Image (cartoon, rainbow, N blue to C red):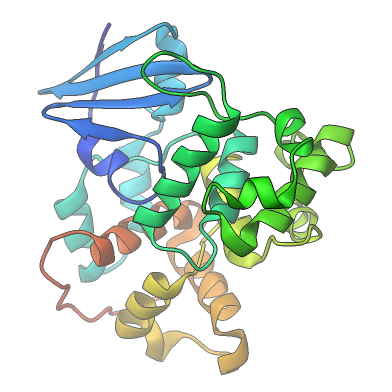
Length: 286
């Protein structure tokens, strides 16, 4: 299928660290979405897709229904963001499935992107269904019935115990992954953080990438670095709670689409582009 797009860059969207299962070969990207193999490439303003999924599913997954002009207008608050929007224009957040997103980001705890990708690939190969060219993401029911030692064979390491516990909670219904859709951001974050192994960063990643809570602003070492460099003098709060202070500042400063600003800032740290040289001239918008 061909889908006409505006302000969409497939490469930036899939290579910015928000998803871990997509692989590129020449001009084609291949991934698994909702249990279906998806092959995608960009031809000018057209997104070309080969998959068993319908058009609406692809539009929803790549958030092609987002109003990027409105989003850019709100987050383009200073020379830093203006530079990033020009560099990475078309980078969109991806709507991921809550279960896969949650386990993927639990696997990311204190881990590098290559290692995250490797462990998730191993997890799918060992516990998912064979789709031919790849494997589906394993269900909570399947993972709930394995053991910690078996799970460690996928290279998840110390994360295995918490991932196994979450799988069992989801399988029994003790943890309802539909609930955050109906909750406000802070309530949803509190719900997720009530589960062992889910801290503020993982909760914010899942709320942003799976639940569409656009005000979520995950803070990891990359974001801590870039925010201190360009906005540090405007952020108040104790050093021990710096991550929380940065998130609160970002929500005030970037507004309802702070999560989009976060991904552009994050990508500036992991991409091959030159380091930003601007200093922000901040005017806080409440």
